[in-house]
Structures are given as C-alpha cells and as structure tokens.
Image 1 (tube, each protein chain N blue to C red):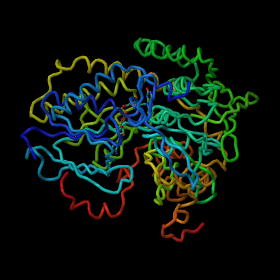
Image 2 (cartoon, each protein chain N blue to C red; image 1 turned 120 degrees about the vertical axis):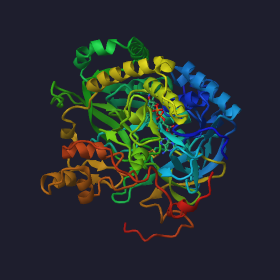
Image 3 (tube, each protein chain N blue to C red; image 1 turned 60 degrees about the horizontal axis):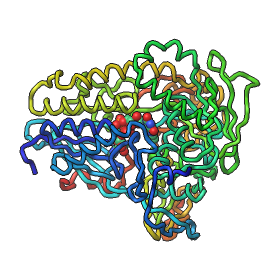
Image 4 (cartoon, helix red, strand yellow; image 1 turned 30 degrees about the horizontal axis):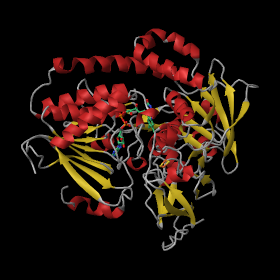
Length: 474
Length: 110
Ligand SMILES: Cc1cc2nc3c(=O)[nH]c(=O)nc-3n(C[C@H](O)[C@H](O)[C@H](O)COP(=O)(O)OP(=O)(O)OC[C@H]3O[C@@H](n4cnc5c(N)ncnc54)[C@H](O)[C@@H]3O)c2cc1C
Ligand code: FES
C-alpha cells in the first residue's frame, strides 16, 4: 500500500495534531490522523455533534478564524488524499520498532486503535513515524462532597456544552485555579446558566509579582481582559484568593461552601460562606496524557513527555507536541505541532530541517512557553489544600478509597510513593487507573509526581488483546 | 439564551429512547450523557461499595464515573456513546452486571 511517500501517524486531532498534519502533508508526507473524537478539533475546538446542525458553532469559541483555517487546510488535504482522518479510533497502544515500515528503512510503528463507542474491535495502522498529540485532562483535587452528581470538572462542563449543547443545571459555581476557569464561566453564562461565583484560589499579588513576564504576551492579556469584561456583563461575582471547602447535598449538589485564603494558602477561619447552586464546575489545572509515550519508552520530565527543539522524543521516530509535552494552551499547541510537522518531513527524507522555514512558529513557541511558565507559578492550588480533605473524603473515586486509609498507609505503614499507596489501599486501581486520584495521593503522601506507567492507554477487551498479534493491517 | 439557541442549532427531529423503560426525547448527535442532562437527570448509576449516586464528572471519557447500561450492555461511558433512536438506557447499580436484562450475573459481592 505504499506510494513511495513516507507515512506519519498523528495521534490526536487537536490543535497540535492538526497543525502537525498540515505542516507534514504540505511537505510531501502521507499522514494518517487518528482521533477518538467524531470530528477534528480536540478539546479547544470541540464542536457540536454534526447531528445538532449548529449554524453558529463559533458562538461558544474564541479564535474561531484560526479554526476555520485549520479546517480548510484539513479539507484540502483530505480531498487530495494526502491526509486520511480516522475518527472514532481510540488508540490503546503504539508498538515501536516493528519490522517493515513503508519506506523499508525508517523504524516502523504499529498503532493499535479500538473502533467506535463500543470499542470492541481493534485496527492497526503502520507508519514510519509517530506524532503523539494526545493533549491532556483535567486535574481536580478532592474536597468533601466532590463525588456528588452536579460536581463536574470545569473542562467537562465546557466539553458537554461545546459538544452536546447542554448545561448540567441552572445555577453554577466555577471554582479552582487556572486560566480555563474564565472561558468556562463565560461559556456557562452565555449558555443561560446563572453563574453564582467564579472562585479562583490564586492570589492576585502573585500576578503583580509576575507582571513583567505576563505583560510580554499582550494578546493573552487582552484575551483575559475580554473574558473579564464578559463576566462583568453577565454580573458574575469574582472571588479571588478563595477556595471551595465543601460541596453539599444528599443525592445531588445543592450548595457549596467557599472561604478566603490567607497569605500562606490556608483557609481563613470565619470567612466561610455557603452558596446555593446545582452545578459546581471545578478544576485545578491540567495533566498531560503520557500513556502512549510511556509504553513506547519515551523519556519524561516531571509529568510531561520530554522533547528537543524539534519536538522529538528520545525514541527515534517518535515526536510529541501540544499539552502532552507540557500544558500551555491552544496557541502553544499549534506552534509545537507546526514545528513537529516540519521536523518530521525533513527527518523522514533524511535531511536536517531548515529553521528559516519556520521562524514564526519557533518564536511563538519560545514566547508562549515563557508565558505559560509564568502562569504556572501564579495559578497553583492552595498550598494547604490537604487540610480541607477530611479522613472520610473519597480520594479515589473508582475504588471509593477515602483519605483516612491513605494517610494511614503513609504515616503508619511507611508508604512513600503512589505505587505503594495503591498496593496498600487500592487507590488508583479502578477503572480510570489513577488518572483522577493520582495528584491527590501525591499530595497526601507528600511525594513527587511522576508519570504513571500504564501499559495500555484504554481498557481493552481481552479478546482484542488475544488477537492483537495476528490482526491484518488496516 | 439556551445553548441550542446560542449556537443556532437546527437539529433534525428528536427521537424516542427509553430510560429505565420511561420514554424520553433525544436530539440527534447527542451522547447518552447530554441527552440525560437535557432531561434534568444528572446521576444514573450507584457505586459498588457504598451505593452512592454518580453521573458525569470529566465529560471526556477519562474518569469512568458516568457508566451506564445501553441496550443491555453495562458499563458504557455515557459521555462518549451517541444515542440512536430506540436505544434503551438503564441506570445501573454496582458493577452493572446484575441489573441489565439478558446479562449473565458475575456473582459480585455486594
Ligand atoms: C475537557 C477539556 C476542555 C478544555 N476546554 C478548553 C477551552 O474551552 N478553552 C481553552 O483555552 N482550553 C481548553 N482546554 C485546554 C486545551 O486542552 C488546550 O488548550 C488545547 O486543546 C491543547 O491542544 P492539544 O492539541 O495539545 O490537545 P487536545 O486539544 O486535547 O487534543 C488531543 C486529542 O487527542 C485525542 N486523543 C487523546 N488520546 C487519544 C487516544 N489514546 N486515542 C485517540 N485519540 C486520542 C483526543 O480525542 C483529542 O482530540 C480544555 C481541556 C480539556 C481537558
Ligand atoms: S464523565 Fe468521565 S468518563 Fe464519562
């Protein structure tokens, strides 16, 4: 099935994967773009399901023009046959260095994906190179009541709104920390929810201290100011340096208690107040998806996949771009994707890429990384968030492990890392494989976060695993 | 303004699905979770150990909190599965294996 062109498999059709696909395809590479979603766009450019026939999908977005350019580019390449887009394909494993790449010389990869919502049938895509552009997912630190229906991740509320055109209730509180809270609060308000408060735990003085680094990115400041203006016009009260202490309700959420923080990041006694609401959209930042990289043996740095200036991982033939290499927003994901596509095209044809061909993307990557580095220091969960986690607070949502046994495992049984806590308590052993509870366990155990080693990126039916070695090529 | 109006949605005609046998309307394209939210339903399963209610949490297929039984298949992620006309959604308890009709029990220990 080779036409003499090198073949790149891009996993993830968000801003990073799309930019990379277009850059590589424009330089003569055959691209297969693989994504679990039914449409391209990833988290940022998530759009209403086609069946909902939205005439103004851009109403829930900003930087829509950028999306239109990506979409036009993708459509052109799809038509020309230079890019193939496999939707509804959930990649569960990328096998490295298998024999017989299209070119015969480059290392060959086998990308295994499960099909459709039922995810019971697997297909294999073989390629000379792989780009991991799998994005990230949201981190939420536990507090009493966070498992009540009506409590959702901030990004989850946004995803349901952008994709399904639904809101979970009438009155929402948006809380936690990070830049994502602003678009979520404005999105919910525009969609008719009454946003009772935006509760941000960051200290405004921290912004002042990083003013110079932040002001170096005027476009981003304007974006933030735009959100602030819209919040004002929807009359959303903004509580900075506040945190959610507890979510209340029996069968579902009916109120939250929020409180002010002191300079050390501790709840200030006596400042608690109760806000009635049926929705709490909460988030404490993002975690890169690194499962596929982990199984391939790519080096990581902290929680992210480590890449060089060309977005190459340390495994030959594997590139990574976007949130999987560190969280920094869609513009950074676009720049990194573009650089990856440019590098892949050159390297697959055996030449070194010419930096002059992509100076703009390189420059914006530098600027945006500096900006997101500054943001990271500003947006951090309250330093003493574990004080709010009572012993009977559920930490591992899947296995219903509460904080008590986890603290016991650490204090009395000597567990000093996530793995030992898991073996002693079952925290992280359930369906989500620790994706939700890991940051909390790390915090409670007082250890350093490390990327989890999960052999498979998705749960795989045993029958599929048994047949995996003998699957015919896609 | 509601989200459908905001995005200028002109969905095709709503179709009927059932939730625990009760007929509800769903719009084409919506996932099980979106259709249930639109009906005002925010929880559709109870946990294995303490029987606590759960629904959507992450909204993107990562957390597995939104598990539901669709057409007798338990443990489907409601936030990922799109609805088709006539689908039968069932709320599920515990592992989901002793609530769906036609499912073999797994003899779990609740
Ligand atoms: C739920 C959620 C909502 C968000 N909403 C916003 C927002 O409204 N505004 C904003 O500024 N930022 C938002 N973000 C942040 C956003 O992720 C980034 O700014 C941007 O989308 C990153 O681009 P990316 O290309 O790196 O990754 P993404 O856009 O996350 O794209 C990654 C893609 O990879 C696919 N993928 C991942 N793993 C697999 C696999 N194993 N198999 C197949 N496909 C896979 C996913 O389906 C996804 O389409 C959100 C993040 C999340 C998690
Ligand atoms: S809500 Fe998390 S998997 Fe569906």
